[in-house]
Length: 476
Image (cartoon, rainbow, N blue to C red; front, side):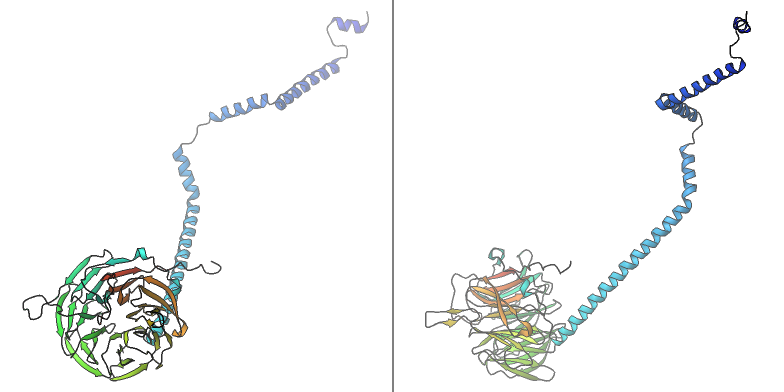
């Protein structure tokens, strides 16, 4: 037997010890390759991940309190930094807001100072007329309480109440908001004693002080009655005029009262001291109306003498203006240097105190009446101006109130719209804020009985004035 066969019988490998070692190495390589295949297949990998998580779960977890404490310890410096940044941002924002507020206030103050200077010089003219929308007749509120034609009215400085007077010799205080009567001062009977004070003849004019404390009313019996405006309690009676009292006006910011009369005079009174000051003469006929603002002067409409006069009280002098062809029955100051007047020749005039002739004259302001070939202009029975603006209103018996815009430098008068109202418009007043216009309507003219419009109502009409929104500024 050969050596090879003997070896096989004893169970030894034919290739010797080296061959056996090589086979072992091959098996180990096969195992490692099998492991790799399992890892690529993913099954074994999943098992290993879950095994790792299970091993991690065996480690005891930290409590939430420990985590919070650790987080607080870790973010303490960061929190301080964050709060410091937040505080600095707030300070910066506050400083920016203060700077904006200061800039706004400076702009407001500068604008106000400029307005005050223009107002003192009488040149302030705010442009509001173009913004006014034509009122809807359905929005006009009608207050009825007087038995005869309304002759005059005033609005309290706070725009909350209206005082109206009439040929029925009564004075009524109205609430603007509710339209209800707040107080009625009844007619006083002549010669009767022990009754409440009041007027016993037609009330032709009224005025209220700029602080709303005093109300003054004048009548055909030559009397001026002074009332406490809040309670309507009678305080004093001024006597001295020798004919009907036709015009009253308080100097703004004071209790100095100016009055004028058909006796052709202008008188000055101190209401707070219940005293008479002085009398001025100059008109050649019965004076029909009067107005005043802050300066120590007043303006009067001279009726049939055809003049408008500016009275300088300290100097006891007067300026005389000519322009209307007929009787000048109404006048009002627009600002300290300009005024508007109306006459029975149908004209409306804009005046500057530096010129003796009108700056603008609108003839036939309310049209013509009468048969063809015999036409006559409608009388202008009342005028009103929104203080320091370009908005003017005029009244007649042409079945309408007209709103006008004063052109630049008050050298033009342009019609804005008609507001239908039937009757004689004997008095017109704008509210201080300019958000409504009040008209005193009667069946007859306030100074006489030349015509009577039967279909008219003796009433107070509150006309709301709405402004169109301004177009947005370019780039906004």
